[in-house]
Figure (spheres, rainbow, N blue to C red):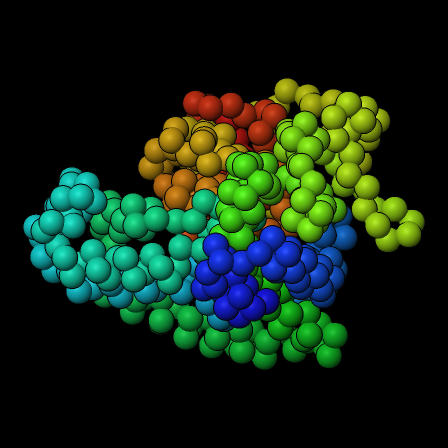
Length: 417
């Protein structure tokens, strides 16, 4: 689908197309997307909420066969992918870019202290390479609605490396060596564990699942980035905002573009504010909005929601990346929350998303309410080597900004100090 959206939408001159041609692109993307979701859902279903087929079998086997004092090491080795994610490709490319300038102290100082306009006037080659990097990787953290990353965002990543005193040449060598050691250890551990056919498949599948789940979403993310151009063109022609067009039901888009109907702005705004999608028996989807959606939501019972949250100084979850850290809590759920995040804070979230990765890079530890083996927080924390506890269910309800906590991710425990 990426190739199709890039060729037919992102690189096309949509301004010269008729309303009907725009609809044909919209409709084709919707159909391609439905196929991608239909086939792609098989991966997350293997590790979904209380049903975690791969994770449960992996944990069961390792607890039976791995040395008790090395269980965490074995778990970490088999749950780390041996292939890069698109985010890791971005990181590697950015480190390679940095190697060309890192030896110059003035460049390091200016990157830390000066804004992008100043850097454009002083470091033309650096800005050219940063621009190329941005064009190549801007979509990596886009997800559904973006925004795409800018040169300023990637400059922030470079500053993050400099703040942490990371030498790009050494870091690239370290990453290559770590990957080599990972493959070696996986083979060694398999020989020691002597798994049967089923458990061997589980051991090999765990890392692939963690690599494959975000890979599926990354492909969608890239196409969503491409499709923004189509959404903007439709918005311009219908005199709507981009946000409003993204909230339009499929049939409304069709009637506006094909039959020249006026968009129902009141319905669009209600959907944008709050809506619920429900599957019908015939395979169609009902979209509830306005008061109808609110009334339905009131009746919904969350099976995973604790009926009563008792006051506690200890919160338990699962280890996603081992380690221990202390710091001040910052509740980070959306892009706007990131401004309050400082280096060394403990990031606490309902569930992390690619849009808050810059805040995750600053965290001394990460704690989430939701998540399993292949959730976003688990994947990114392993990439960053940041202690992480997932699946606590209540962290965001017990903790608040400024609370001092200790995170013992190895044991899956968060303690208020």
